[in-house]
Image: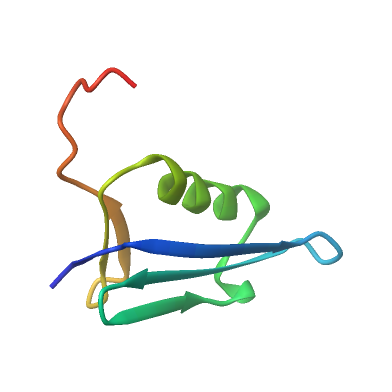
Length: 76
């Protein structure tokens, strides 16, 4: 069952080019350690999704972070 992400924490370490993200939902959290991202671009895509899309959902059984429920053609 997917849960709606309420907030997040993101950190980038320039000295070794690694990112760390924690997502929070009501009653829980999920940590994506620095080894979770294969490239700076992959890290940036996840941060961009968290920053710009609402609502964001996390589905633990499938390991997917996704945007859903936003009206089509909202004009942003």
